[in-house]
Length: 202
Image 1 (tube, helix red, strand yellow):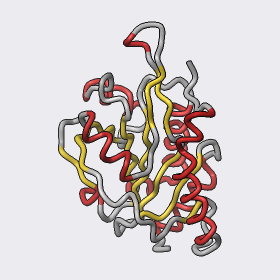
Image 2: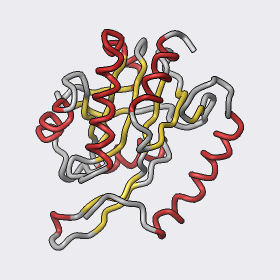
Image 3: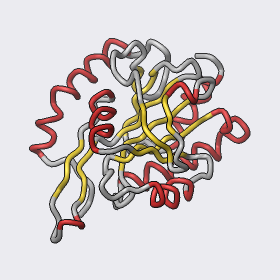
C-alpha cells in the first residue's frame, strides 16, 4: 500500500501544518532560501535515539555539520526511498563538501525497523547516512518534538501494515539551529543550493 496521508490524517495534521505555514509566512524571504525558512522555530530542539551501529546519538553529536533529518520507515514503498535517493544525489552534487553534511533517517516504525535492518537499508543510499531508532516511547517523543505525524495503516496481516507519516525533511545549520523544512518531491537542486548557503555561513 503506498505511503500517503488520507483525508482523516490530513485533518489531524491541520493544526501543525497551519502553524508551520504561518511560521513560513513570517520567515518568507528572510534568508533567501529556496526551501521553507523556519529559523527561530520553537520545535525540533532535541533528539535522543540510537544509531544503526548501536551508538547513542543526540543532535549535539553532529555540531559543526549541516544536518538533514528525515522521518520514515524501511518498508515504505515510495516517499522514503525517493527522498533518500534524492539525498544521495544531493551529496554527490556537493562533492567534497558533502563530508560536512550528515543525513539522519529516523524510523517511525520501531516495531519492525531493527538496528540490523536500518544498517542494511540506510547506508545503501550513501555510506555516510545514519539510521536512528528508539523504542515506542522514544519514537513518540522525538516525533512530537519535530511535529511529525505518523500512524499505522492495517494490512492483510498484523505484520504487513503500512505507515502514514509526514513527508518532509528538517535541516540544521552547523551551529545546531533548525533552519529549513524541505517539502517532499522538490528534487535535489533546491537543497543543494540551500545546503551550500548554510555551509557558507548563511
